[in-house]
Length: 378
Image (cartoon, rainbow, N blue to C red):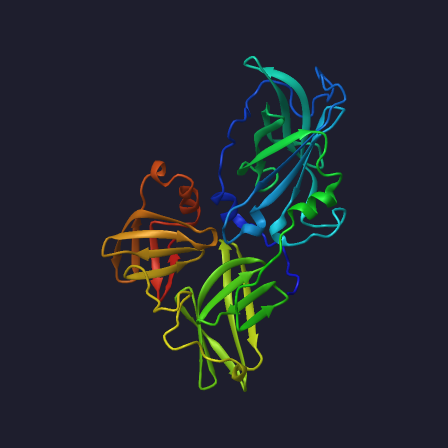
């Protein structure tokens, strides 16, 4: 499979969608910051420790979120955490691997005692090229049968406040001699979805997989960002994406269609896919219109593509909002539809939680409806 552009821009939606506080860490600790002198009050006695951890979730943007971490606590009291984004499927040499970041976070460590229990105190932060620190934290790792563990909070976007948490486990000494050994231990292999044809947009790193059951899966890089259906009849290819018909142009046996993928306001990519010979495609089995091979059935009474969000009208008054790129959705909304004007009432921020950040930035109280598309008014 071709090597795609693995680093699509995260966009505003990604930054706002991902909020998770650290677990078991003490970010407000009054001890010196990670830039403090490494050996200060340090009783390391020439010991070293190595920790590894992994963050993984099943989402449309897994390649930008999922990562493995290698944390070395060195003899001189310094702590260095490297990051490897394994879901980009690049296991090349660490020195030139764009998915491997040395010193993604750094700081200091020392042996300590907390609440009367011996532990390792580990201070980490993201440090930019100018030496400015952000995302600082202080964690405590306790020995349980020779294995130390703690929850490390790391920035999703370096220097920003939106974070994820990886559980780190380690022992004295080293398990991996170098970064390349670590990469080989955590590397992943991409398995393409089952398909009868894979139409590629090499310039933008997109692929449309036409599956045997009539399902169409659209990938941006290694991320499944949209799905729909396809069919071919009498040499004519028809395509839907996100329940909306897509215009397919024909030139002899060649068929071309495009899809605008919008991650957030202000950032979008147009993917263009070409089937060189439609006659080489066999139509899906009769009645196969979805991944289960059954009839596709839309949820609710109507749905609208709202620029990264999907507004689903469940009945005459109730609505839910989906964020397909991240597999997130939230119900509890109500609405009034007057002609082509959709007025939405959202529940309180205390109910919406993290989803409220998406809605406040991307959503709106009033939408203008045009076919299958909703456009925020104002």
